[in-house]
Length: 172
Picture 1 (cartoon, helix red, strand yellow):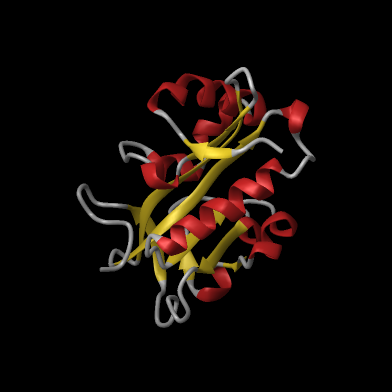
Picture 2: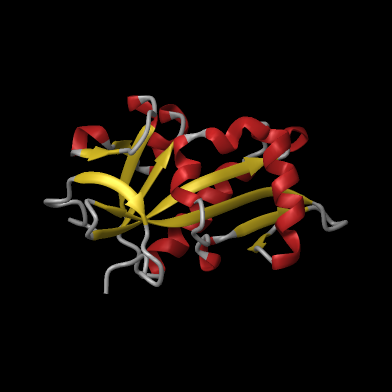
């Protein structure tokens, strides 16, 4: 397994290429991309896996969002692994590593849109069942949430929205 390291600004082009290879260029039309537009990803939660030649083989990023306009959260995604390296545990390692970092940094809630069987073992559950909504169409079973701090979802309901400029993505 290759080491997980913080993303560098010089990785941006390789990451975009990896995302195109993994998800296709149509990915930017999805609801989650509306929540990312004009908002910087959380740099301290951006990690990559590189091969010995420096090529990015895997990447994960998080984005600040709000729930119900008041509750800060982070949105996991995208996580991508080059097709030639899928099935080797790189994606799962990136998720475990970054969720641990998010918890240590004081983030309290994480949401995502992704395959239930893949994310459920990490502790994610159906977000709609918890009273959360997305601002556009997503498959209900793919919209998931996880408490990074016990009780963080108590009394939290509402629409997921873009983080406001300058707003911290974790509770104070």
